[in-house]
Image (cartoon, rainbow, N blue to C red):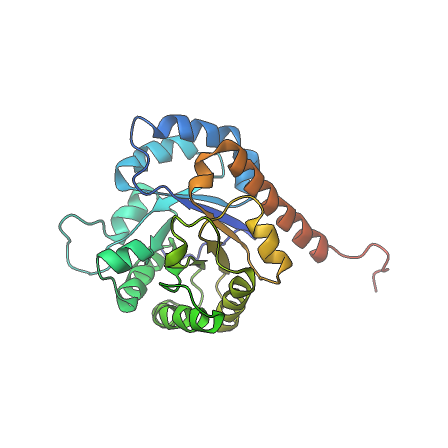
Length: 270
């Protein structure tokens, strides 16, 4: 049975896709390190996206910590799949979010924008948050990146209920394994375009940047005017010092937003 209550999103977020880098022998130590940092990570909206064999371990490791976890993909066809996991099974396992449309799956498995939209809708139908990856394949002008991202986003927005929470992860495919992120003005243009496209939605929307994220990337993107809510972290999530530094940037962003939203004590109530 599909859950119907929309899930609220934290004001700032970070996520990491562990790919297949961790297994039952290496995950426990990494999870122990995250648990030790849970107060900061939970305030930074940290989300771990894992392969299916680690779901049980994640449920035990992150229970009561405020660290969210979810799946790296979902099956969207209504027919019972072979070798895939439908949304209902992921929700039953405890997944809170599902990544959809990672550029590796688009390129290697031929997933189309329509396929990705179906997966996002399947996740939302089980009250899980779709984390939708968008981004251009190759380097080029910012305008080309905006066009590519909006073309990928359109079917998702058509498929999702307006009140469903949604996370965009702008991750240009060409930045995978690169030593530098996308140009900061380009990140700002893409983030602005996604926010404008989501302006009429009633559900929470967040815009993250991923791709060669290391300490300082979020701060420089914000300084360039990028309206980001956070970042997707790759290799940095497995380096304690880098993970802590990126988390500190997110907490600075959260503090600045909380300060901006606080009432001015100098103004008397009317």
